[in-house]
Image (tube, rainbow, N blue to C red; front, side, top):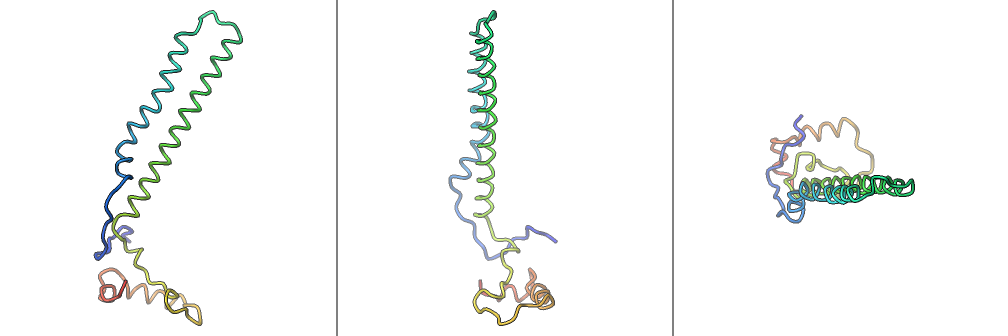
Length: 137
């Protein structure tokens, strides 16, 4: 079964912020990762090589903080990327799965639909069948 078969009478929405963000995500990822790491490198370069235990502990704490900031940044970029993909899919064309008939949408039934009735309805509303083209959306 082809899960991504498009329905013909659907339209796409205009692209918006999601595509602009999607194109900028690699740059955002690189810059957001490089800046904290460059700052940490600068701190290590300026640190005293004969540091006391307290200064070494502070330097190690700075390492942990920067690693945490970078991992948090990656997680946020991934989250925004997933959000962009979801919006792109939702703004795209309709697919066959979007066109399935819902038996209780306008007129609730007195009895539940049986499995056989549902199978017959799915078979008659398959993509490309005449019933699909005549059916109002």
